[in-house]
Image: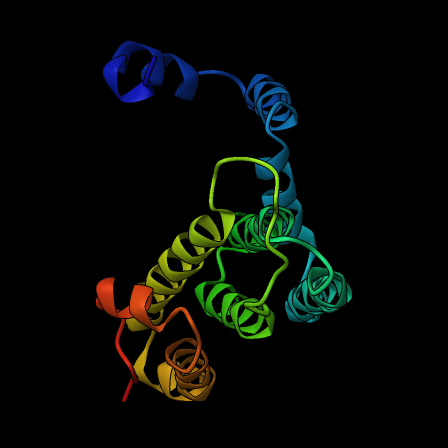
Length: 185
């Protein structure tokens, strides 16, 4: 049920006393972990906390990168998805598009491409890894293009480094098939 569909309910809520509204609001916020964390960030944190959040994600990624090199493609895909999910969560909480693009570029630049081939199973997880990786890069480029041009300038070196890494690896064919640019100017 959407609130916009029930104008009577909307009117009734606005007519509640402040005490009742506060009580309802607190109950609603408690049911949604992301909303709770977002409100905590918005009301109780500042710019240094934003940088701390970014640094924690980068430190966590640095820890996992060394481990990634020892895994097969299936296990690496699971880890990489978790890393990208942590950035998506970061964005849901902070609503910081620059930090989101910066962190995704950091992760995508750090991820190695060579993994052991799994001899069990019928799926080619290296192909699935490649598809996921290229798709994530494409989404990141789209978000990059929506940033202010000064911010794009600051991040363009990292993005071009990532594109160079892709086009000088075995992912070049998949990148070309996905119409991924070779360079961002």
